Amino acid sequence: MIELWKILLEISILWFVIYQIILFFTGTRALQVIRGIIMLLILFFLIQRLDLERLEWLLTKLFALSVLGLLIVFQPEIRQGLARLGRHHLFTLPLPEEELDNILKEIIKAVDYLARQSIGALIAIEKDVTLKPYVETGVSIDATITSELLQNIFTPGSLLHDGGVIIQQGRIASAGCLFPLNENPDLSRIFGMRHRAAIGLTQETDSVVIVVSEERQDISLVYEGKLFQGIKRDDLLTKVKQLMKPKTRKNEI
Amino acid sequence: MRYKYKFDIKKAVKHWFTTRIWLKLIALILAIMFWLYIGEELRRFLL
Image (cartoon, rainbow over all chains, first blue to last red; front, side, top):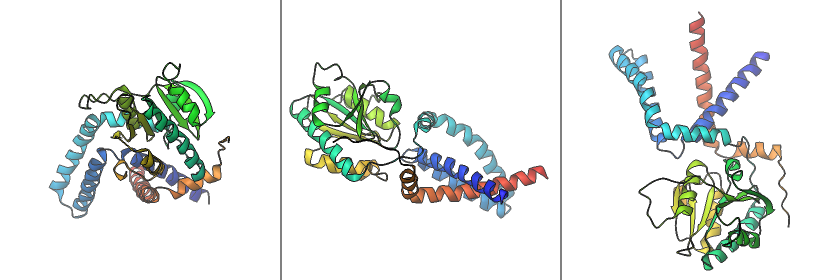
């Protein structure tokens, strides 16, 4: 009986670790490489079973060299992934649908007003990966989400209008938060620091970010490093709800 | 209307086991295969 519990415990721990590793690679360019490696492993297994000595020798040498190569090539992804691993919730509890609806309606009402008034805004909605490190860079608010409060925060001249607002577990967690900037020089110059911050944050986490541009009065959605510009108010609620679902990928919106 | 977030362990665990099921299934199969592989290697090494 003790043996069985030990076995189950070992398998459970291995299961959790492997699942986290797969999650880490999902949606990155490393996934294609991982698929290639798995195919090579299957080939290696077959070569071993068929006793093809020379091919087995060749593949063994190739594997030894490729490990070092992969570490060098994917160093940025590995660094990002390790940082995310440390910040990931073990269990995440989604908001009830009705609650999410009410919250999003308040956010969209605020965002619509801000866009019409040419007031810039940056709002990040936490999903599975915690935004706690970024919350700590801002001023703690911990308030119910209301359109009026969001409008007030982003009003020019307000102490907290610079930086982003983070929505965490159904509340405005903090304002004036600093998000990591995307440093891609190929990104169009029409996108300012606000958009770069949104892209940077969504590359490091799975949060959904809403950006209001004060120059163009348009609303953009940013998810997994991809920017969707010029979202209409009527579509915004549907698109954000879709992105907040666990299985949605950026190419599904 | 004030929303008070309460962490419910039962709901959280249920949510974990009902989302990304295929990915978790693949991870479970890999974990069992890896466990069997390590076990075999360890036995060979000790003997």
